[in-house]
Image: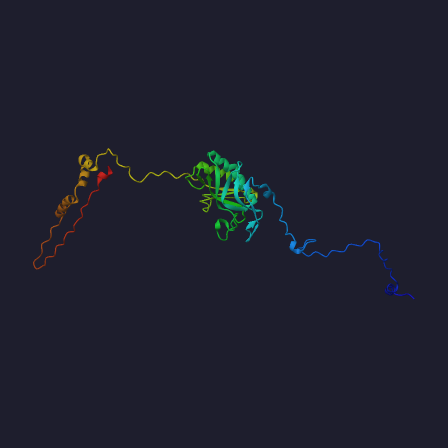
Length: 325
């Protein structure tokens, strides 16, 4: 009788493996599964936090010999504001180990901080050296700020919002002087040197005469544009013209008094001007009386009309010609 395959498997005896010998080594016991966030062999309370990511190449290159710029956490938001690899630039260290402070400290990306430090160490330190002094401070007007361009509502995000820009107003020197970059009283050649230095290093430079929003500070950033397009808009105005004073020149001390000069050598018109107003008014009165028309005689039975009083004429005082001398 032929049985089905299922019946054959159930009725046939399946061989079992042999028992493990007593002298065989015991297998190690399986360790319990680790819980999430718990390291092997340690309780959950002693688990280490995740390690921070390794520093970027920019962060490694920006050492304390170049700038005092401690790292800060990345800024994320609101919106597209912020960025990675953030630092707080407090000072730039020059080659002679002196520091150029940024007051207040500037928050920016590491790449922007590196560019600012190189600009100060290479160009601005040399500019101060040409003036027989040293650079000690940068007047920081603005750095990171989550806002639109020119602080206009609805405008495109500014490079300040990306922590990729810096605004400065002046350079303070060790001799106590300040190079005000937007003041006309600052020598023009100094302002032109700063202009050429910034425009050769940064893709965007805005100052007085650019758009009306940068009349009192200089803006520069590392914005990337198509075709490496660059913007350098900063009108270095000339100094204010020296306007002549409006007051008359003082009378020389050796000049004769005005009264004496008017009596001795003054023309007839000047002597007339010195006469009192009453004496000048008498000829005018005589001329007015001579010019009066004769009154018509009244007819019989007609009332005599009241004569109108002549209006008094004011004496015209001639212009004192002696004041023009």
